[in-house]
Image 1 (cartoon, rainbow, N blue to C red):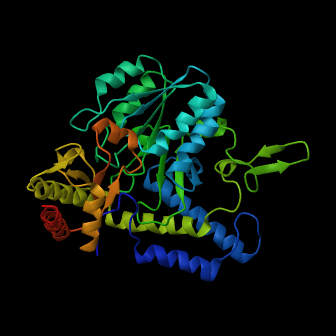
Image 2: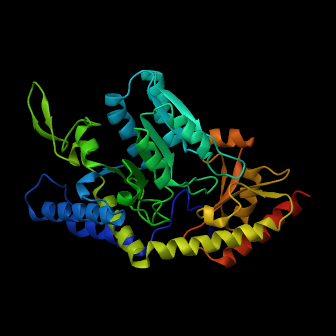
Length: 385
């Protein structure tokens, strides 16, 4: 089995699985509520994981990290809480044409509900953002710029620090979709000066069902609760309630305790390897893959042609052959890739494509696997004549 679908979800190291099993076998209890030993041990493990994730992205405080189910929920939290309390009809939100649906639909819902305006930074033919057009949009004084740090289709690594600085200069906040960047690149929220950063555990060797929203302290403190229920309250009466302190104000109900502990173990695993080393390995694999696949006639690689401008993603089309057929035949050879619009339908419409085939790489992939991919693609061509 050759797994080339890490952009969708990553494989998990044994240390992550062991950490989650240990919780269920030795510490299984609810957190923050009990005073017995198991509850206190579970609470400590849960909060220690939060501290590890905070340190991983260089957040000033672990109180600035809100556990969510995934990147999608984290972005929705910002849209529903900050957006509904701050945005009014006519306010502008700037996105990009390479966004995942998770960073488009929440704002479209708000547009339909509140009458806010949405404008998109164009993607140029080389797969990079049109920064001149971005600056033109900033002249319209948007309230928020929300963008992906790394495209899940094109692999494009966007100039996040510049985008954020320019947004701030125009008086806008900046939300970064880090679903693809945090697992693959060193990310420092303090250096980026991001107002919000969203990412998921399952794309970075961790379990499914848990993600994180990082936010600047003053912003999170000013935002109303996202959901109501247990643990997000300080006091409740028949007349009303008082919200809990950060980050618990946004964490209603029993959380994904085992998953948080697994998240912490994944951060330990990646930290031991070093994110610089992960990034270098992926860039080498990606460059090699682009060289090998470019030798195949009729194959067109999407996005930047320079591997230094990309993460570990190589999406492509094969002339005259549907991406689903490509993926199915590769699967018969034991090679797992993704085919479709990759939750980025507007981008594919922009490119004039119904779908694409995507091979995505992570720290466990090798050049030999890339060679096998190239051989299998040639087989697809031969089968279709």
